Length: 278
Image (cartoon, rainbow, N blue to C red):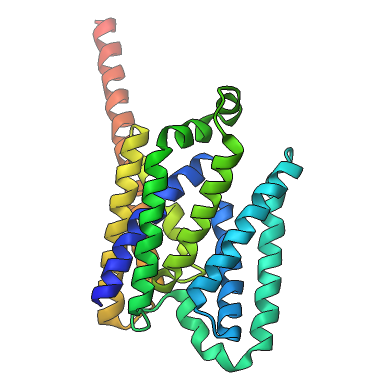
């Protein structure tokens, strides 16, 4: 549990951190594509006897590079690159899983996350990649911010857009690959997107959205691990459900507040019209 909580906190930080830039670049589906490709890496690792997280990282990084290259080929239809790699990843995963029927009992922990299978090697891999992700984003924060809002203007200003795009996509793929042990391959992309979606409803600035999304990610990870431990549930499902509940709660209270503001303004208008008539 101690290792699981540490990995959960790291995942709660780096997933929304990279997810915010992914959302701002309107590439939310890339997280789903890379997570499904990581599933093929898990299958390859189990089949060959390699550490599944390392195998998933290799598959995910290679796919991230291919996605960026395909985006350059399909500039007008850049989303095609994501759809192509998503389909290819699922196809490879299906083939590898069918080839290794004997390890199907181990797949569930990778699909939906597991606390009990978290080992010391998992923690050090996640911690190492987490440190790399944080350092990279800290070093090129301004350039990444610029590219996220106006890629063409950033390119015209001399920013190395192609190199930064490839590097960021690789780090996104690594984030997905190393956090899947707790969150699960099929759910890790949700931890990148849902806290960001919640933060965008609450924040008034970019930095505000960044801080709020990280707080929501960490809170969801810690709370989800508590729930999964005491109720004997899949860790990833519990973490994501808490994040979804927080999003629904924010949307509900925001709509309630908007109705009160409209009602108050209508009342002011009626009183103003009555005063004007008098």
